[in-house]
Length: 306
Image (cartoon, rainbow, N blue to C red; front, side, top):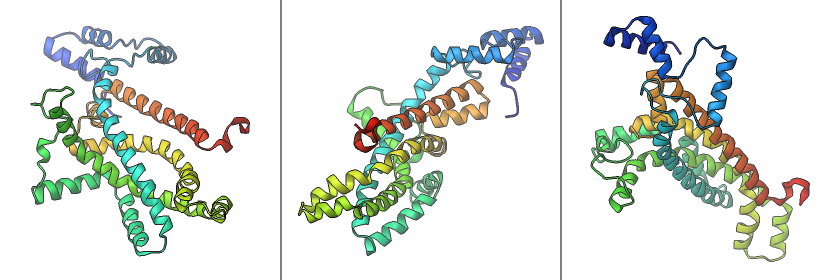
């Protein structure tokens, strides 16, 4: 990335305070706890040591503000929208996918397959822009200019009904955009997995034993068909967090994605590093949790076969 924010800050100090280059440089390096005279390997080891102790450095633009404090301010809003959308789309996708599998070849299956294929192919930010263009500009049904940020500035934050409703209003369209652009993938995956499971011997045996179809659908088909989706669920977390940059920029939603975009524009390297690190850790943890849940749901893959 071109440009050096430290040099820009040094130039600002020289212009505003009339300091010499060396004095401005020393002050800037002291403020950001940087020692350029140290070898790169030593700087790297110090960075790793600080990260292990919860110190991600200080913002270059917001001078003196710890990166971890910035992340703690913006990350909860992204976690709220992403997790809510993921739960909704995953749950609905499973239910709709099973219905499509049981009614495969029919009109409902054909229409839903076509619809979900189109929705899955549209980038999420395009869906967000369509909401703004048609609902906000053309038809003037939604005042998107009043829905910027995570909540309205005139609403006092707190566990009150007014604040909760206001937060949900601001998060509604980001969540809806996430759901519309991801539910198709879950439904189509669940459909194919359910169709494959319906042909398994244990399903045929359950029907031969005369078990109720509802029990077969839930306990035999659904529980086994959903297993492959857990791996995709963990992987999708990384894609959704990455997509939050565009979604939050479109709706000007006060989340970690919007803050990352601001850091890129401002060349705030420490904030960028911190956000990328947190997203990476979240994806790794999600994959680890998915592996554990997979073993809980499917005893056949547990270590030692127990």
